[in-house]
Image 1: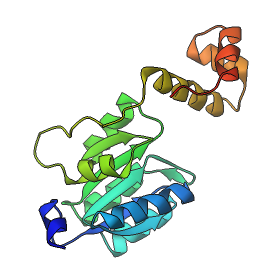
Image 2 (image 1 turned 180 degrees about the horizontal axis):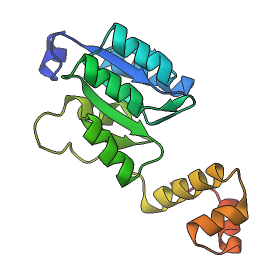
Image 3 (image 1 turned 60 degrees about the horizontal axis):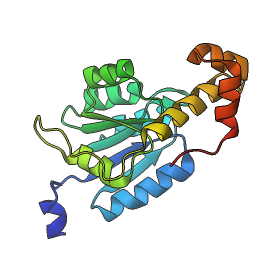
Length: 184
């Protein structure tokens, strides 16, 4: 336990994980438990807010887009009940506007998926104005582009023409990209 305190965790190691991806949130809870946290999980905005109001944690990782609403509602509830809570907003829909909104509302940091447990723990434990170290294995630029295209494609209900229009690219170019395997 002494090495956990040395890692930057204080007495209160409670951690709220809010994500609607059940498998992901369970894996993350196990990984964070190994890092000295006491995780509690929620898979919706309603469940996350209920935990935030009943047992406000010292740390939280909140997904931005949940099936029943916006994760920023959970961030607001946490800030009201426990202003010192260290909150990381985690999302697969990274955008500057949402990052600014998350930080303005009280998030400590903002990470795009896929983020591993080490990156999340570093973001939760980072103090002061210093930026956390860059990830050990960041996604390649090709992979980031591919992920973005896939996300827009899914948001357009897998409609190639609509996705191409929104991405401002030719439909055939998009079809070729979608036919290939994901880059590493």
